[in-house]
Image (tube, rainbow, N blue to C red):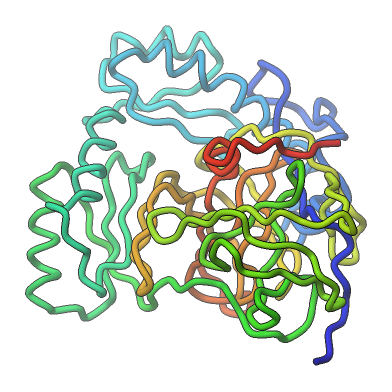
Length: 378
């Protein structure tokens, strides 16, 4: 079989935020190390920004991430969620108790008043996750907490009229504040056939993308393979085996590699220069995020929701992060980064990089915790 563009290292690594307390920064305050060349190039293309605007945005997102814990603490029991607002360059915190406004603003965050606490929204989402122990109808494609809208959102395929769908929606609406959105396509997993590109291959057949290097191997998506499956590199050389995998429910895996492969902190920038991951601080809603995959290369977007449940035809997965960045079959397992921070590995989504769409990733910190792994950083 013909395979090109050999995998350059075991780990596709990342980039992202982590810096000052000031939330609104001027271009001169942007920290240059946050914006390596692949991030600059991809965000200029996907966000329509100049290089300096990218640096400024990354510095602002980093500051918002730093402020978030103190802002949430100041909101107390009335905390209703938080997100980065690209228009103001600041963290926005929702509160149900107006008396907490001044304390939250003192941390540097903006404040909006809402009706429901984050705890109430999370409880409603959790109730839907459980759905009396039943599987969700196929035409229900997912559900998540929309912090900006202060509501749980359930997505349903357009035109769905099944009685089971209505029963599910009635259950969801009884659980708490719920909005129903219709979608034209259902999310799918991004595993692919052998078509070339930077990749690894499972049982010398299916192709997925390397996620992040860890001591002894790398992490990737769970739907890519099962424990014991063999893995080869793009050059047909033996790479290792899946040591552990979880799908559905979760979507993550750990591949233990042989001594011929050296885990590194490097991510392939697909012609833009390589980048280095320095940590795994999670970015929040509204933050920019970029992904690397063996089919579509390097693309960027925005985090739209966290802790999303996605109802794939192969099974339901909870705890995913929703983005508006594109991906395609074969990108599964690939790395997501924000600034210099690793964020997660590609799970699935809808659309493609021609028409656009949405993509979900499995947060990397959950994978590291589940398997007791250490991320390789530069």
